[in-house]
Length: 85
Image 1 (cartoon, rainbow, N blue to C red):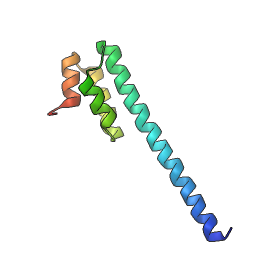
Image 2: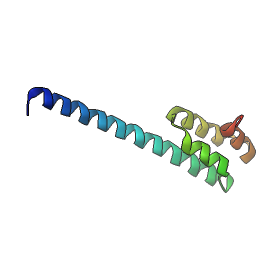
Image 3: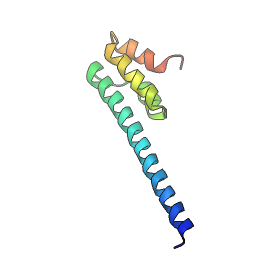
Image 4: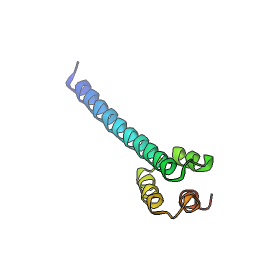
């Protein structure tokens, strides 16, 4: 294998690891939010779960989680996640 091929292979490996870490963090944030909602309010409305599963922004998921932990009830938590949807 040439030096250039080795470098490209290593770059690809590092990019794959970074992508895997990002996907893992996204999955973990989604699962934590859905679990917390269910524990706090008994169940997760389908619209909330769908919105959470479709969200690709880890920081938004973390912010929603903090919001629902302080919400006064299920309706307020649902509104925080669904907003205008």
